Length: 323
Ligand code: HEM
Ligand SMILES: *[C@@H]1O[C@H](CO)[C@@H](O)[C@H](O)[C@H]1NC(C)=O
Ligand SMILES: *[C@@H]1O[C@H](CO)[C@@H](O)[C@H](O)[C@H]1NC(C)=O
Image 1: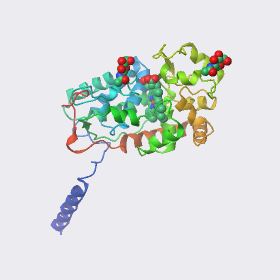
Image 2 (image 1 turned 135 degrees about the horizontal axis):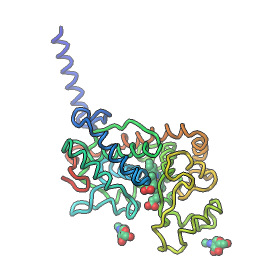
Image 3 (image 1 turned 120 degrees about the vertical axis):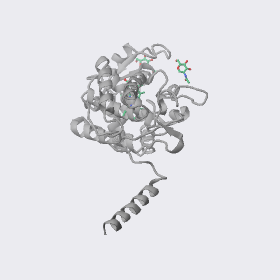
């Protein structure tokens, strides 16, 4: 009886294993519990240290992970440097002179490698770093699912086509997120991460100097002071994405939009008499709803945009180069 039951179990398990071979291995929150039990605390220490020495780093790490996940899935492809076989995503339109935080991931990776070499992927470190960064500036927390592997490829052209830009219109923004399995509501919630961090003049010059912009006049004139109209002048001058509380993760971003004080055109389109206005209004009134929707949308970004599988993956030893 017992042996027949265990035989049935073996057969059933074999069936489960074989039926899952072609599909993505499931991510799980306890993936490193036995192989590297201190991985998560080690990463958290590194992220806390980095954010306490520079608050903006929390924003940079969240964006780094988003730009990784939108190109080939969350596979650390964004971290690979140029090489004969790699056309680095670091030089794509949205990342060049803009994306930052690699040295923080490298530092966390080095510390994790020193306790469990070859076990924890760069892709997982970036996913955990984004969560820890959110928490470090007062944002929501969520349980990160783990077990991603690192790509051996990168794609600058996919980064150019799949990462939204400040000039992207609302319909296209919705389409681009839908293309990654994310809803219109997810897109609005995730844009709420512009409650922290900075943008370069080159990304918002068009909006603040276009007299037909739907923009608060006082806000536009303040932003013009540090962002000259001539294209090329002061392109890298920075302004906070949330003028009220640029260093804390709250719902002020949505209140700004209602006052026509969105910095990027892609921010203000979320509240411009189109389909997402009501979501912006909800989040502006209900910070805890924004928090929980943001966390849920981050989980979908991290989990459902699946990384590459098969022989094209590995656990990189150093995040910027393939093994
Ligand atoms: C909806 C479409 C989006 C567009 C068009 C967009 C565009 C931009 C642009 C143009 C910047 C300024 C970059 C620079 O000047 O160098 C920026 C910054 C930022 N973005 Fe987005 N973004 C979008 C969605 C998201 C999402 C989904 C996240 C994260 C979940 C995110 C997180 C951030 C953060 C945190 C910053 C500040 C980074 C820093 O200070 O280093 N963005 N975004
Ligand atoms: C990236 O930015 C640098 C410095 O502004 C520029 O020289 C280079 O052409 C840019 N690279 C690409 C691929 O656009
Ligand atoms: C916008 O308005 C200002 C002040 O009225 C004017 O000097 C400027 O030329 C206008 N800009 C454009 C692009 O029309």
